[in-house]
Length: 208
Image (cartoon, rainbow, N blue to C red):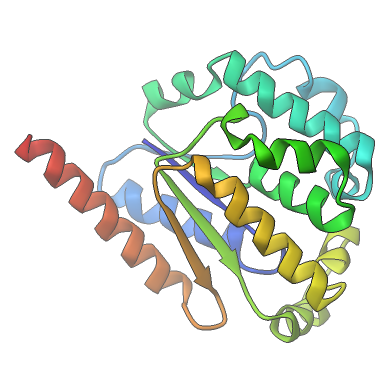
């Protein structure tokens, strides 16, 4: 089982990923909280690790490189090794990269990839998080050590709308997508819905 948590910065991705992992561990489901490429031997991991993560959405070249790494993930069957170890909770993946490439440019590689989302590994459940611009700007003012990517994410309403539109296009490859406004839904409420969805899925498998 593969679960993706992605979306706009300052929307609570890390908080939700950590809480969902904690709750699922209490249910003995062996969740694995992971960030980065899925293929353990992805050849682009090393080179991209030398660049600070906040710089990735600021450069067309870096954005293209990350997209290429995610294409390699699928070619290398990167999800299989994680599935053998347990339930994968992936915090951020190519969806966010595509959305930044689209909203920042749109850059050619991101625009092309959004037409062909099947190039990338799909997830059983994708959880997309967002929040209104004024809410995220207020969160930014309270964040200690805010970086360039945080500031880019609150650039304008157009950037917000383009980002979320790109997420919707990227999400076509997933089995199911849930989108939440974290100014209206708490981490606990979202976690509860996801756990309920997982429970229904296990029940269907048992019935079959």
